[in-house]
Every structure is written in C-alpha cells, then in structure tokens.
Image (cartoon, rainbow, N blue to C red):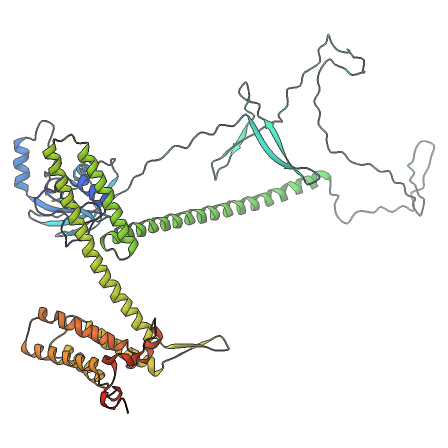
Length: 563
C-alpha cells in the first residue's frame, strides 16, 4: 500500500526480488516493475477532469461535499493504493478511472467487499455514489479489486493435403502403406439434406458414393460393339450386392387328402358337414401391421425418454467435472504463485537463494545495458554506474541478512525435529497386522528434556512464576549429574535468577539465555545424560576423552593413575 500523499518514484521501487531497505525482505523484479507501472502516484485526483478543464462550480461543489480515503487492494496479488476521492463520485466512474490507469479492457475490473467505516459485503453497484453508500467526509474504507479477462486465440484452419498415407492390414496379417490421392471438387457439391443434433449442435449432411455420374448411351452409338463383343456405347457402374442361396426341398404327407368344390354336373352331400368357427376372431395382416405400429411407437417413446435422460445426466456430469477441473487448476496456479512469492520474500533453501541471485544478475545486466545505450556523457554515465553499484551492494547485503535468518530458522527446525524423533514412542508390529506403541524409559526421559528445552526457548515469560519455575526444573534436572557441563549450566541459571530478582531489562538476558539454551542442548545430546541420543550420533565418540562430560567419580586422578 502507498500511504499519505507521497508519490512512488520508479528508482525507489523494489527490484530483483529485494526490498529497498536492508532490513526489509526483497521483492521479485517482475512484481516491482508491475507495481511501479500500475501505481504511478498515490495521491490521484478525486475525479477525472474534462478535456477543457472542470468548471469552477463543479470543483466548489465537490469540495463542499467532502472527500474520503479509499484503500484499493488488488487480489489475490495483494498490491494496493490509497486515493482521496470526492463523495459525489459514482462507483462506475471510479472503476473506469482505475481501468484507464491499469491499462486493462473495459468492464474487466470488479469492486467489492467494502470494509472500514462502512461495511458492504458484495459487489458495489455502479450507479451509486460514495455518499449514497454511507460514506462521510474524512472516513477511510478499503475496497477489493479483482481483474478477470482473457484474450481468445483463433484456431488455425485445417487444410487437407493432396495425398494421404494409410496403414492397412491385409488378409495375411501384413501391414502395408496405401497412398490415397485426394481429388478436390471442381464445383460445389449439391446439398442433399441432413439433420442437426439438438444436444451437441453438430450438423450432419447426407452423402453419396464418390463415383462419376451415370453416362447414358448415345442413340447414335447404340449397338456398336468392338471385336470382343462388349458394347462400348457408354460406361456402366455396378456394385456387388448381397444375394440369397435358394434350395429346393420336397416332402410326402402320411395321409393323402384333397378338397372338392361343387360345380356344374357335380353334387356333393352336405348333410353330415359341420361348421367350425375359430375360438378367436380372424387376425388379418392389416391388424398385425397396426399392432406392430402401436408397439413400435411405445418402444420408441421409452427409448427416446431414456436417451434424453442419459444425455442430460451425462452432460451435467461433464459440466460438473469440467468445473471441478478448472477450480483445481486455478487452485494449483494460486498456490504456485504464492510459493514463488514466498520463496523470494522468505528464502529458506539453497534453490531459493539461487533464484534471488539469478534475478539480481539479470536486473544488473539489464540496467548496465540501459546505461550503456542511454547516450549519456562520461560524467553522467559514471554517476549512473556508481548508483547501480550502490543498489547492487545494498541488495547483496539484504540477501546475506536473509541467509543468516534462514540459517537460524533451519537450525532451530533441525533441532526441534531431532528432539521430537528422540521422544517418539517405539512402534512394534504384531503378527495380526496391528501395531503397538510403547514408551520406554529412554523415550520418556527424552520427552521430559525436550519440554524443558522448549520452556527455555519460550519468550515473554513472567518474572515471578513461569521463568523461575522453568529455571528451577532445569537446575534440578542437571544437578543429578556432577560434571563441568552441569556446573556451568547451574551457574548460568543462578546468574539469570539473580538478574531477574534485580529487575534487569529483557535486552540484558539475550546472550545469557542463548548460552544457557545451547549448553542445555549439549546436555540433551550427551548419551550419558540422555541414552536415547546415542542412536542419533552420526560418528561414535569416545566419551572418556571428553573431560567436560565426566562425573567426578570417573575422572582419573593423576597421582593414582600409575598404581
């Protein structure tokens, strides 16, 4: 944020991922340049003046209405700017002014979530003024800004080549390459109709086989044959079609019978005949066709209903999946951006410092090239180079300070991780696949020592109870062993307790407490006092040669060593 009415100069902006002051963390070069270009001045005019100048009565009216301080913050980057704006301005006019300053398209900036003197938890309407939102002269509020726009790139038009190479497998299971030559149409193809898919919007056209049109015979050349006996009056195109195999079968009935109808000259006796009526009415072919049509309509209705339901569910699932995938990609991009900003502001690893050094070198080369191509005279060029060297020196000092801070933080984290590993319980696997957690006397001892070490490192403890209580517990813990190390720790504890009783300031305890914590950490890492520490020693040491860790009962006496 830029506070007050001071303008930010381009040369004072943070560059190459470092801050301008040695005590502040460095900022990346890209972020510094973006802020220097996007925030040209902190104290902007309350409203944009007209091309010929604002009228005097409009200026007096704005002054009579009053102004308010607005803190604009661009999210998620977190860059901000403070402006003194008139309460008569509308939200739309302020948004248009900001879009003009940031050089972004219209209607791509959103203003929302006003906090401060007035609380508005939604997007601010463009037609309302600041006074209509409840602001009063002299109020101070904050407004979030979000930029959302993208440029769509046109896809390249596909051009079919003159020939295509296709790999096919023949009946002998051998792969061969077939070259298909593309015959481009000389005239536009005729439209034969088609249909459009309602769900996807795709258009499908009817097509015909790719053969030439049928050439009818010429009446004059009809019946002309060559020597082979073929008619050459016109070409004919044909295709093989699927045919049926016909078979003839004959059969003989067990009982021969026949029918006879009465006719002229023939009399048939009908006295013994019986009329037989069918149990069901006669079902004609027309009735069968009507029944089939009715059932087909029912089946089609159900099939189409199922198809529409399945398509809608699939489309909704696809839309939901695409939305989740877009949210996941956006979240990964935000996390990646935050990680890049964090590793430049608070570097911890060797790779983080390499990034800072590379960006600093790129910035130095760019500035050197700019100075060389600026056309300055010799004196001005020398002065610019001295200024560049001074800035580079300050940035290197800032990086060195960050290295010291990172080394201290990494050391504390390693010590904490080692102490936690010592105090972890043992995990034993059982035959049934379950695990059993067991606290041994050694892990319990390590846990107690870790708690005492954490208590020594805690800041802002009260003099009367908490700090003295921690010192007393540490004193009685180390007094179980009598050696030079424990005596020195007890001496430091007594000295700090005496200073606390005298009411000395906190600054006078910094060196004493750091020395006490380091000696107690050495006490924890000694296997004689903490047996669990033996497993975390990288190289085994002969403790008999370390006089500072020997109890008095095991120190050899020179006068009795020869006996």
